[in-house]
Image 1 (cartoon, helix red, strand yellow):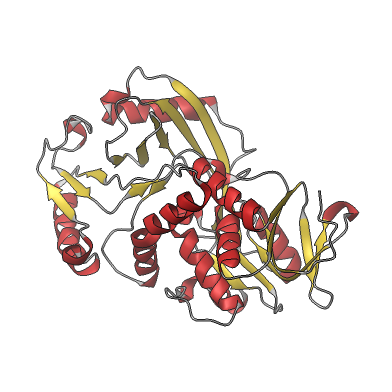
Image 2 (spheres, helix red, strand yellow):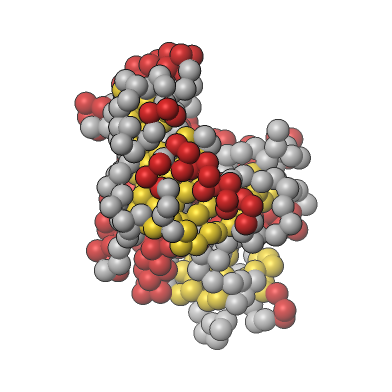
Length: 386
C-alpha cells in the first residue's frame, strides 16, 4: 500500500535489491527519513540469488575500481556484524577464502607475479590477507588434483554471504527504521513538487530525493528520464546443492564457475552469463551443464541432491563499471545500479558514498571516477558493451 501520510521523505529508493536496500540503510544511518518503493518484492530480481560469492579482483593492473572493491571487502564484515546486532538476524557471512587452479605453466608464472604484487596491494602484514601459490596436489581433497596440474592459488580475502539472508536483514532494518512499500512501480520524479511518480495512476509519494536502484529494469527508467540507454540485462543461472559437511571449505573458482559452501549445509554453484535470453526462468539444460562441470573438478559434489535452481537478469552497464550518482539534467534524482557480479561486495560502500554525495559530505571511501555518471552518459556513452 502506498503511504497515505502527507510526510515528505528525505529519500525514496526505487528498488529493494542489494543496492536499493544498502542505500536505504545508509540513508537511515545518516538520519534521513527513507522509504523504499518496490514493484514486486524484496530480492525479486537478480539480488535474490543463491551464490553469494564475495571475491576480490586480481592484485594486478591495480586501479581505483580494484582499490574500492578491496576496501569494501575489507570492511564488509564490520557492516554485516552491526546489521546482525541491530536485527538479530544472521547474514550467513564468513571469510571463506578461495582456491583457483593453475592449469598451464603460463598461468603459474602469471600468478607467481600476482602473488608478489599482492604484497603491495593487499598489505598482508597489516591486513592478514594473503595470496599465495601452492604446489600441485595441494588441497586436492576439495579441488581435484587433475584440475590443477600446475598447483593452485589460495587467497584468504575472499568471503561469502547468503544473498537472501543478507537482504532479509537489510529489509528488517529498513522496516524498523523506515518504510518498504511493495507493489508500486516508480516512473519519475517531479523535482518542483518533490513527488515520486508511480505507475497505474497511483497517488505519488513525496520525497526530496529519488534513488533509482531497480536492477536491470532501472536502465529502462533511466532511458525514459535522460534519453540515453547506458546498460542492459544479462541472464545468470545457478544451482543450490545439499552440502552437509562442506560448510567450512573455501570457495573454488574453476572452469568459469564458482562453488561456494554455505553455513546452512548447502553449496551454491554458478553462474552462467547469457547476453541473449528469452526470460528469467531456469533452463534445465543449463542446470545439467552446471552440475556436470562442477562435479568434474569438485568430486565431493557428486551424488548430492539438487535443492533448487535459480536464474535472474543481472544489471550490466555498457561501460561495465557501476553507475552511481546524480542523473544528468536532475538535481535530486540519483541512481545506483549495474553492479553486475560484484554488487554484494561493494553495495555498502556505494551506498555510503552516494548518501555522502546527497548530503554534501565527504565519503570515507570516494567512488571511482569510472562509477560516476560522466563516465556513462553524453560523449562518454557506449551504446553497447564490447
